[in-house]
Image 1 (cartoon, rainbow, N blue to C red):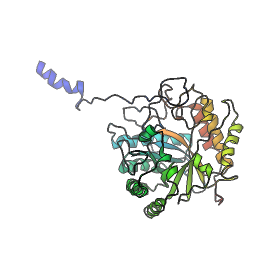
Image 2: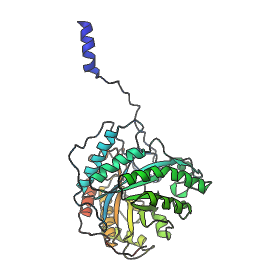
Image 3: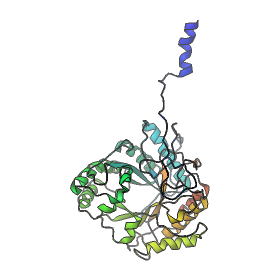
Image 4: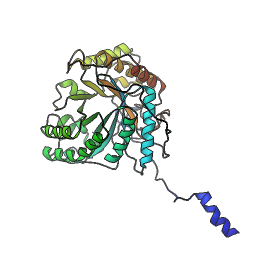
Length: 402
């Protein structure tokens, strides 16, 4: 009887699968820059842009059909968010990523979004390296295709966007916009080999836009882009775009062979936390007017965001510092940016960002999460919903450009 009890009872106690031991979790990164009021920094990705640790349990958004209320059509504004996807070190099943994509899709639908941009990291050896490659955190083209299909089936306008990870550049105080490959031709050969399978994934899912490069200031204007873009246009039926960093955008013409330009817009506005929305709008317009005045119908705000904390207006792109939480600062910024997009007749805005593995329905943990997280912050979510439900018809067919 004792033997039978052990033999028959063991599967019920331990289950019929091998025991899996998890090897810890992400460690927090030290805060750099301004002196924060808290000493615990966000649990960072290798890119340093995103923070919240993800749950080890599979997410389940249900099997109900997801559908955007008002699907995007040409001429309409692109109301969306950047979903940043780093693959976890531990294996995630295809079922998990599809379920997680449905969860993010439902959250964005509830906000009133009609567009989504899927960003993912790739890697380089250093500031002078002529090689780029996938890393452990880079999702494969096949898995990217599965996630894009979930968003596309839900009716979203979709964008796919590779972003160079900066982990190997920080030791020399460089960033993706200051790389100086020893061989430009070798770099473009390597980069072409990297992005080609992702262009194919974008085509297979009828993705609307492929961003051929992101914030590569020092590489803009290189002749290698002409060959790469020409090749991409043969294989991809959607739009080829480039996303410029805000500083280069305002300095002059972005010399890239693309017809669609995005701006990662983190314009600093030197005002107090109590500044009015009108004042923030004026601050943005002061920056934009350095490049061109009037409507900007061919410009998309590819990234906009700010920390929900005191002092954030001075450096909205500060991904590391953690001051006292101030949700109103973030919400007012989002409201102001939305007004600028509408008044300048821009193509739309994508808020930075949602971490792919996170549950967007949970409140950020202010001890570990980035201040830039907007999911789960009610004031900011209300600002987004108000923006996305506005009566702005979009840039239409206005041919003016910048």
